[in-house]
Image (cartoon, rainbow, N blue to C red; front, side, top):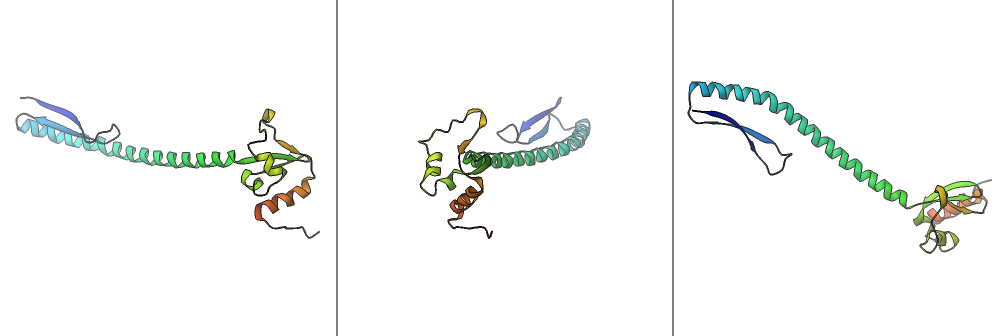
Length: 148
């Protein structure tokens, strides 16, 4: 009689766990000894593999969460509008610039060309000191003047 060791899939997908089985055509003392050796050997192998699979699952979950966070950040950066106001760089969301009708909302609209050469940005020929106040007003809909 013959004893054979087979690997039987437990699930439908390759990453699912596998269970190991042994088929015996006849129960004999030799086959029982082989079974005990087999069980001990698989126990020593299966536990570390299971631990590695759990670690891989945690890594996969962390990767998916990081990917979602990166996609959200990319979406937010696409909505970011870069301007050069009087030589000073300004960054703000297009949503902020579209809150009030005027030159700035027209600049970020689809009707205005956004093809800047060499990574440059839109230039606004105004005093940057005052533009800080304009941008703050557009953000909070309130005039916040400095004390001085």
